[in-house]
Image (cartoon, rainbow, N blue to C red; front, side, top):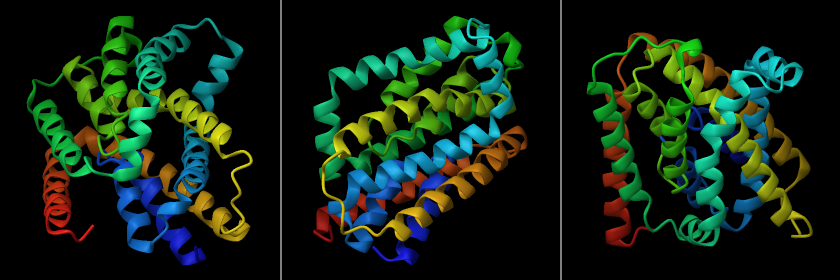
Amino acid sequence: MSWIEALILGIIQGLTEFLPISSTGHLYLGRHLFGLDSAGLYLDTMLHIGTLLAIFVFYKDELWHMIRHPFSKLTFLLIIGTIPAVVVGLLFKDYFEEISITGSTIGWEFLVTGLFLWFADSVKKGAKKMHDISYKDALFIGTFQAAAIFPAVSRSGLTMAAALMRKLDRETAAYFSFLLSTPAICGAVLLQLKDVVGGGVEYISFFSLFVATCSAALFGYMAVKWMIHYLKHHSLKTFAVYVWILGLVVLVCQFTGVF
């Protein structure tokens, strides 16, 4: 993997982790384009570390508050919102790893993401702020996050859609969605690191991995900041149209044997 390929994949990861268009699906396509399928697990781990750094920097005040006040409402909201993903991940880990490797379903998953985005953007706008979020809201949003364990179903897209359905205002929907991603990404990194240890990754240079991680962190931070502002004033339907087009292109390519 050259440093230019690493830079591009880092940009893809950083942007698509927080834009509602599926980072895993885009990374699969990016790795396939560069012929890097065999480097998937270790590369994905470093890219997730990059986006995790972006979250830590952006939400440093909230995370520090939870460290100082571990029994605060915000802490329990994140715990409750993460439980569904933990349960689904542990029960179906092998199955989801298999379909992530083959990529056989990602075209359909892009289409499903678009449907959720379009529907959620069509519901009546809510006015809930962060202090109005209930534990029931967190569980509902977390259940949608669990569904995003499919490779090309967007985690940020489904959690923002769920938040809008629960009548959070648009800015708060994005804000809570990204904050809820913190334990999910942490868990994914820990599981991947466990599988990576002793896996033999000499063919990926340290410099390329460094570039990939830094670019994912930088563009992830930019994406979080931009998306929260964007959703306050704009529609998710633009992203729905994008993933529909991408999903159809992927399905055509798979049907015709391009990949």
